[in-house]
Length: 383
Image (tube, rainbow, N blue to C red; front, side):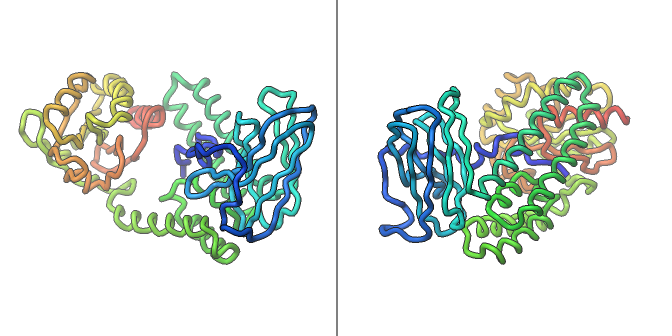
């Protein structure tokens, strides 16, 4: 089991990355032309007299939409929202930051306290059980990140030990998230928490959560989103059974820059990294120095890289190889996303990697950066 890379990113970013640039003026409730649902009151106080605007925003179609605002001129303010079902909101404090909160129809009165003496306006929210759950989950995220950074600092020069410790941390943290989700039951916070779990290894857990959501919140858009995700995972797992760890790596045989065919199977007996990339792919080019470092470290010890380019123009492909000084094996059919190899390996985003053992079986996939470096060091050390 392992966390998605999103796990290293604040859940705040996950929820509120796409922010609305709407005018800060007070707007009508956006649920409909006339108010509906339960009217929720948010009462705020500050610990010193302040002047400024507090805006309540709601997540809608990937954007934060202003639904109410209050001019603060003293030490108190109030906001209102009509709520039909649990949903994600944000409180914009004096135009300086958005503070996440979750509001449900059961939250009759929410209290907000601003510590205006702090540079970042410390915000305390009470009266919302779901908001408490949200921040309990964020604490798990923060703990994982802090401990991961400590491991990087401690084992930065020991990739094998870093991989071992990181794997243990991942397993522990995955279990913490699953226990957390089980403890709060079916809720939209559970759906957000589940988004950091690795889709293929936690499919059964996600499927079970969706069934609970269908019972508790059958009409929620978050239940619908989770259902679509579960369906997509099921379809992907069915289509990629041949690409699971432990399975033989499917054959690839494409043209080299010189024009001759090079088969992946010709490298059997070596540890091989299949690296899907392209000259036009910014993240790929940024990752290339890390891959080059690994290649130079292990190339004389039975390790090879089989680079599969999804380029369309031969000149662009060759120029990128030269510019990035990529001295390993390269192949391409110059068919962009329709590349025969990309279709075989179900590549939907690049860079994408598959680490292949000496016997031709898949050892790991879609590792990058330190995770790839550590896994490769572990494999090569065993050799």
